[in-house]
Length: 91
Image (cartoon, rainbow, N blue to C red):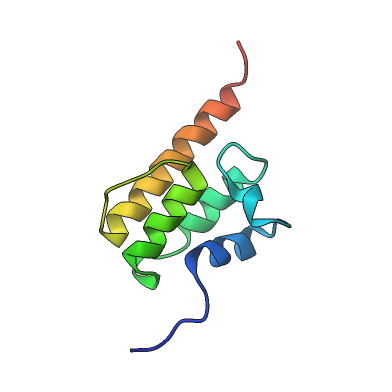
């Protein structure tokens, strides 16, 4: 088995280009860019535990999901929901 040198959160952080990893939290300035970065990363490139860690870190929510594809899909859905709510602004 080939050893990877990069973890998923680092990959997202690098692709977004923000200064701090904490800038990636949903609702922050970089949340749309983070969603774009996630959409470009195939689920198979990282194990399910890293997708689950990314989901929990980026959303602040826990999940029992255990499959990489489902976790990626769930993360993207949550990111898009949040982005949609943020773009509506105050009414």
